[in-house]
Length: 413
Image (cartoon, rainbow, N blue to C red; front, side, top):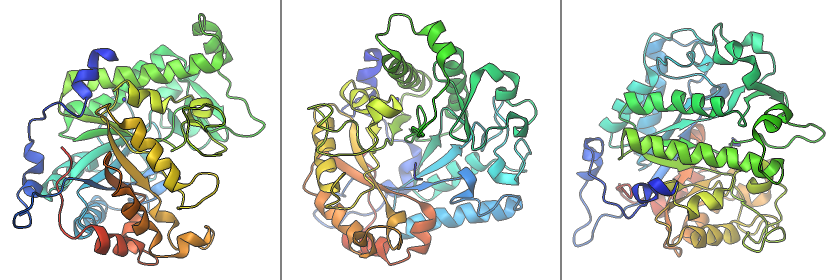
């Protein structure tokens, strides 16, 4: 981010009944306006931990200071009348909880594998629920490191114990999605948190196969030779690898806890219409189906996920990827599937002088939500990211709150 089989379709469709959870008690108790049912919509914020983007503010803070910063972000979410946080708990094949699969995350102490002296995920779940906030645990399945030196990983890291699982590409290290043992391991590592904590959802962002880097080749020839028989080409095999990850993860989540949801927040362009008539009226340089081998539209149409949150990170009127064209495309895509649609919003662009002029208008983001009101499949918005909710450079978030978040809202579930 600029920052999941037919066997389980019925279990993950939004039309299924969901038993209310104690975690929503505080918010569910909020009074609705007289004579009108309380509006249900997801109002979310991403809290990124990779490279300390949002939290902790820097590595090496005391446990008390880290906790205080986290609680402050949750309080700010409540102040902004949000009801959901997507907390990144597995940023680089490491963990923000005492995992038996992977080392402690480097963003906490500055040293991967070093115990921070507290349980950030456990604390986040309890403190979020205490405030009536849902906690969606955000995982990155395949990213191992933002460098290419395995010796810099914690001693005993799975990527060091299994060097054949790892590939360098674009200055980073990735687990090879083409290896079945890797696919099983990353599921096990993520599902450990589902098993142990009262999270509301498993959340993934847009990283599957890595974004293409000019002049470089993702070196999975060995795994393709070993496992790619029967596919028409490497692209079809790669897509099948990601399909299997999504489908299997969905099945395993529901097998563990049927009320835990599974959502994915992809790059917003599945395919351009010039590539595929089913695609969107866009001219994006990246298409998830072709470049990330992620059939995001297929996952929705097959009902493998509970919600999709496309990152429509462009302004209304942007020629190559117009918000006003992409949102209707996603509205049509989810219709009839039972998969809920939330929209990822680029709050981080508001007031950034490097962005197009539209983003220097404090009202641009509010216009997005106004536009979305006309599309009945849109069930909420998620803002990237927490530090921008706090600093709100030009008042764009304050404008959204004033125009659209007049009172507390229950989540759609």
